[in-house]
Length: 383
Image 1 (cartoon, one colour):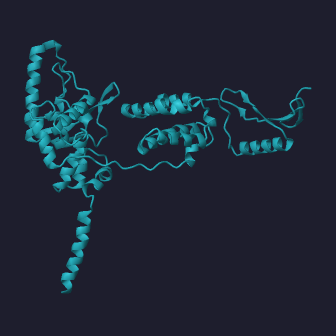
Image 2 (spheres, one colour):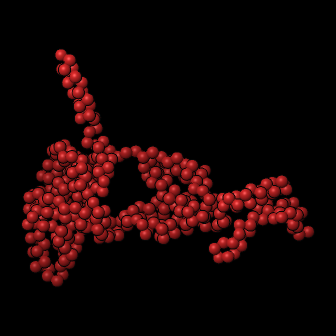
Image 3 (cartoon, rainbow, N blue to C red):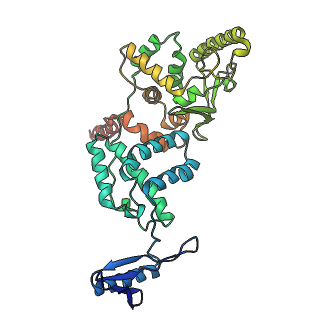
């Protein structure tokens, strides 16, 4: 005997001995009516499910059934949502996490089936695989953002990450050189092609991308000024020339004589190369360039700096850590946080404070000394 309707939206199959509940979601975007069914062994369970469904529908507390898989939605999120808002380097990091971690684990899972338990298991596995807490936190934030977008687009009802507590991020210890160590570095790179790179980072606090993107048109040798107006960024093998990180990063800095002398040498050398190569010289106007005028890759500067430090048995730091060194030395010499922030090109002084304050005074000597001095003064007044 065929399935027979016994109540509104409930039918019974006497061969399978099951009750079928029709869940009428209404029409989807294409105008097609969506009416999936659920089966139950008992009539009371079928009635309860129908009542709950219709109550949630009245409250608009349901979403249309979707077969969208995580891998398809994650790629859509990357290509059509985030790529319009994020820088190339940020997207490079996102794609690495999505393609190498999230899709291999969740790829074939339907978005609507993605619950807390498998997500918690994912984070546990990444911890067992040896990923740092900070890296796992990046995975957490990225996955949460993907699923938030799915909620906004009404593909899923709730974001399972809302009920999963994120790992606390461990603050990284800042690496930087003392004045003595920086002087030692200056000695070993004298007259080397890395000399200008090291001094732009260590004496002016420039970012690697700002050094790689520095052009002669932004250097005023007559008035000893360097304007940071462009950057050259790299994500994997892709390189992009762009403006500065933000409006605050666009800044004009005083040029010390030492840096000016090095730039004049580079300028003369490039002029000689132009005369030798003539039309074969690729005159793109970069300071950091090969003999044929082609600009250096940003990653190459980092690699060359690492080799310089290693070959000369200096304490291991990254090229970016010279920027931290600039901030540390400036603070040690009594420069205020506001001026350090402006020189570094931070958008807000709070950014500088968050990054460097704990590094500037780890023992809180200034604060404690002021309190102690206040009590000493009180004691003197009593005498």
